[in-house]
Image (cartoon, rainbow, N blue to C red; front, side, top):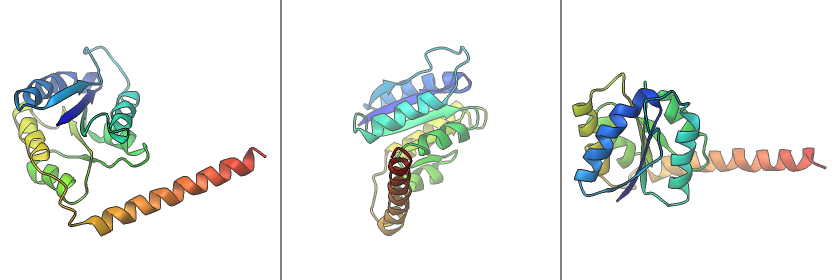
Length: 159
């Protein structure tokens, strides 16, 4: 599987650890940065991972910041993306099994490297079961309604 990974400076070290771990499990990794521990804002990194997932350039994404919250919020702004902050194996599995989350987010200041590896393995070792398709469809439908309305509003204001 092709996995995108990205982090801000707070998550850089954990990202590097997870990148190596993922590669050792025979997955291909695409690194979206940060490429050092120099300060960098996370939104663009999260948007780039989300865009790559949306365009099917990668199959899943893993984002890391201090808490995992900011990168998840940013990624979820990208249409069609479902990103879940996870810090335990059960949540990581359920993110994929129940919610078809294409991205998980982790907090480097919340979870240690060994636990993070277990969370990532749990996420990558399960496939969307479709058991909650009805719920995911409701989310997708609501998002489409918002996007359609915003498009209509933008068209009206440009006239």
